[in-house]
Image 1 (tube, one colour):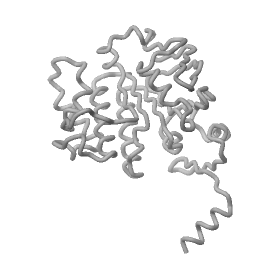
Image 2 (cartoon, one colour):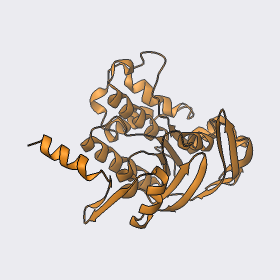
Image 3 (cartoon, helix red, strand yellow):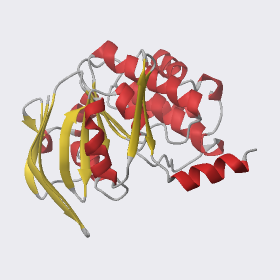
Length: 264
């Protein structure tokens, strides 16, 4: 459904690419890399928020530049890293903004309410968006994306650090909800992440970006540990049991002992 054909971009000091990638409907891909590597820039290229300086992006075999804004809004939904809204809009209206490309939408009120429930933000109905905490705003924006992609099939969900402001329990719960939502509709899900545990346990593929270059496109398997160490320039430990995979940075022995003694 999505092809990046030798795509490149020069943005200030950052030079991204050239990148050649393919994505099928239903796939889940985590974009990983150190801060400033170009992860969000790559996502913005796919979202058509930035035009490439070379190459082209194809969605459903059509150049992304040829899509109308309304058609693109129905085909793909984007959750950016920043959640700013200009005015003190009610929560329900923020979520309904995901439906603006659908004229005469009789199902809008129902879908907005159901999207809030799935994003575990139903209790925020009636609140002003600008009075919410960062984590609450993130949940409302997630509901907006769900509402936008609600009645599409085999669409494209693009999310940038969607769960960064959440506590661990809520992070896991919302990740499962987002994954289930995408699976039900056959949506491809592409997420910029810093959380390696989310990436390894909830995604099929990893796009590893470093210094503006695609370092690897690989399956999310334990065998990727050496690549992850190279990507972040640090030693990592990987633990696996019937519950899933945990990736941990390796600390120096002296640091570990000092922390242990401090807790006694």
